Amino acid sequence: AYSSEKGAAFLDRVLYLPRAWTSDPVRRAGIPQELAFRNKVELAEGMLERAFEAGIHARWVLADSFYGRSHAFRAWLEERGRPYAVMVPKTNAVPLKGGKKKIAWLVERLGEGAFSEVSPSRDTGGRRPWQWPCLAADPEKGMRRWLLVRRSTDDLDDLSFYQAYGPGETTVEELVGVCQERWTVEECFAEGEVGLDHYEVRRWDSWHRHVTLCLLAHAFLGRHPPRRPRHRRFGQKRKKGDLGRDLIPPSVPEARKLILAMAAPKRRGRFLLGWSAWRRAHQAAAARYRAARRSQRHAPAGEGPPEIAAVASEEAHLTDEQWELVRPLLPPQRGAVGRPPLGHRMVLGGILWVARTGSSWREMPEEYGNWETAYRRHELWTKQGLWQRIL
Image 1 (cartoon, rainbow, N blue to C red):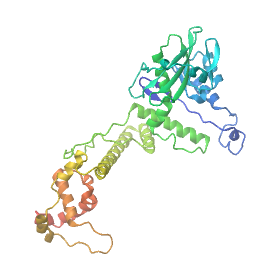
Image 2 (cartoon, one colour; image 1 turned 180 degrees about the horizontal axis):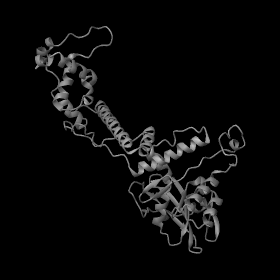
Image 3 (cartoon, helix red, strand yellow; image 1 turned 60 degrees about the vertical axis):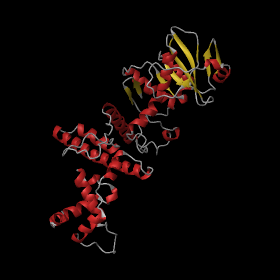
Image 4 (cartoon, one colour; image 1 turned 90 degrees about the horizontal axis):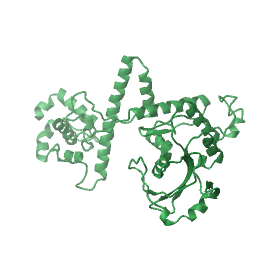
C-alpha cells in the first residue's frame, strides 16, 4: 500500500505459494512453469523493486516485524539508499555506538525519564497516546540508524520496537509519525470492504483477476467515497422523484457493476449509474428505519430518537369513540382460519399516518402492521367508494 497526506491506496499484489505447491504438479494447475518458490521477504523485495522502477516516490519503506526481523531485507534497502522504519522483535540486535546490542538488553537500561509522549509531525488526532524513547547511532555518510521504543500510557508493559534508517537530520517527531503509518495496509483492508478477504484461491488467473478488480474498486472508492447519510427530519416532505444523497456503500457485486458501467456507452452508462443510485437510496432508507425501530425497541421508556418520539405523538391511532363510528362501515374481518389477519383498526391507523405525514408507504411505522397490507386495503377501499362513507 502507498500512503501520503492525501490518503492511502493499494499499489501492488502478489500471491505467496507454499513450497509444497510449487513442487506438486496437481497444485500447479494454471501456475506458470517458470515460477519457482520464493519466500515472503523475496516477494516483498520484488514488489518494492517494481515500485521503484515505476518511479513511485516514497520517502520511507514501512513493514511489520515479520519483514523487519530479516537482516537481509534491511540490508537490501540500505544498499539502494532507501530509508525505512520497520518493527523488530526484542530479540534482534541493533548496531549502536560501534557495536551490536540486543534490544531487550538496551530497554532494560532505559531510565523512566527516557519515556515521554511525542506528537508526530503529521498528527490526525485519531491515534492513541504513546511514549517514545529514541536511541540514535552516529551518522554514516549522511545516514543514521535509530531504535524507537513505543510504550502504551495505559499498560506500561505494552512495548513495541522499531528500527529506522534514514537521513541524519530526521527529527524524532517525523520518525514517530512514520512509525505510526505502519498500519496503512490494515487500514486499507478495513476501509475498503471491497472483497479482498472474501475469496478462496482456486486458480492462478482467477485470483489475479479478482484481486486486481478489488484494488481498482478500492481506488475508485478512495476517489469517490460514499456520502454519509443525511437523516431527513420527521414530517419533512421530499419532492417527487428526489431520492436525496442517502446511499449505502456499494457492495462487491455493485462495485463490479459500477466499474463496468464506466466502460459502457454513454447513454447505457448513465442509465446503469442512475439505476444503482435509485436502488441504493431505497436500501439506505430501509436501513435507516430499521435502525430507528431497533433503537426504539431497546431504548428506556420515555426516551428514543426524535423521529420515534414524533411518530408516537401523532394522533393516527383511532380513539374508541371514532372507531365505533367507523367500524360498521368496514367489511367483515377474515375468520380464525389461516394466518391471523391484521385488524382494520390498526391498518386504518397506518393509512391515516401516511396521509397526515405525507410519507411513503414504506416508511409507515411497524406498529401499524405491514405497509403492503395497508396499501392494498387503501386501494381496495378507494375503488369501492368506502372512503367517502368513512369521511
